[in-house]
Image 1 (cartoon, rainbow, N blue to C red):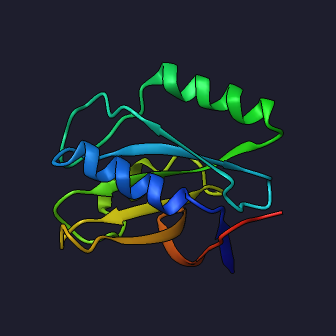
Image 2 (image 1 turned 45 degrees about the vertical axis):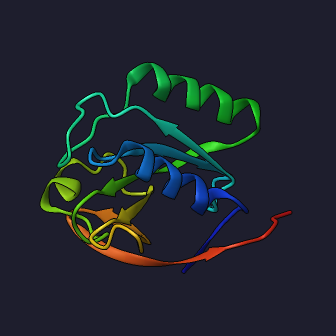
Image 3 (image 1 turned 90 degrees about the horizontal axis):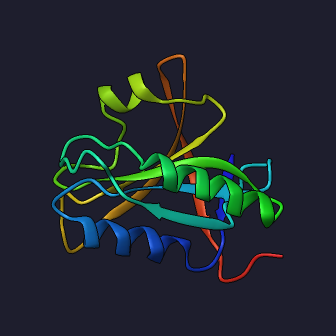
Length: 138
């Protein structure tokens, strides 16, 4: 399955990953229930860790409200791996809160050339999704 991401979303995730480096960046993804991503909500990693993240609960609630006002739902989460590849870690799999969500990882193993990959995680099974970054979405 190909997941489409609206114009600018990739750049927002990358910028947030660079802004938070060397800590893990994190944020929420919103869009229609089909899983396509229309909005990125960068959030604060309240753990301030380079190996784990927790989204600020107030920012999480604000993102839910903003998405709802725009007619969207939270359809996933993104975070960075500041020093490793963009693939779900054991911790990512264990803590994955929703099997319907999209989990986007920004891998910064090569700092100047980060990767952006997306996955579904259900019952411990990781399935990679193809990403399509669009210039504009209708």
